[in-house]
Image 1 (tube, one colour):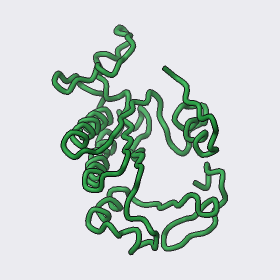
Image 2: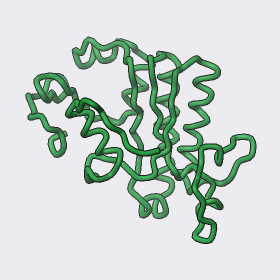
Image 3: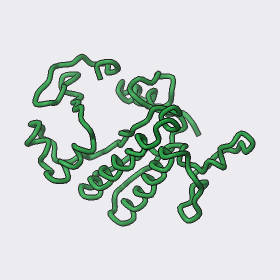
Image 4: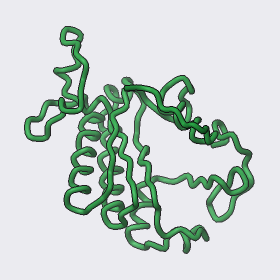
Length: 200
């Protein structure tokens, strides 16, 4: 947050860095470890960090190992760790049932045979069909497709209110605000009213 947050750091307490007069609390950790602790001990944040947090109302699951094409093609097994991140998250979500859960998938989940230079078509939601699968883009695409399937199971078997989105451009703390996801996040941080999200 030091490089992108509009608030100054107010200090650190029990492993949590505080920003914006307590508006943002930041914990730098491997999310899988945190989720395992929360699944073992729902009072983990209270006991470990002194935070009065035992339930999350909304969860936006943007944690993933990404690095663009060079990482997807150059180190696919590193990217495959996204499967374990998502597995831990969906286990937590199904056990704790937040009011709303957002799972950002990716356009990489679409079958690669629909994404060739000779086959240029506008991809649509129905182009991913779990009953008739196409091959997604490398391990990153497989992890996102698996995440969408886990979202379907979380909703149908556990009653989780989950929404999946498929961004066509990346996101991350170092990404320019001209890209959609960081631009929308910046608008939310500024509490814009009306809050405009463009697109069709």
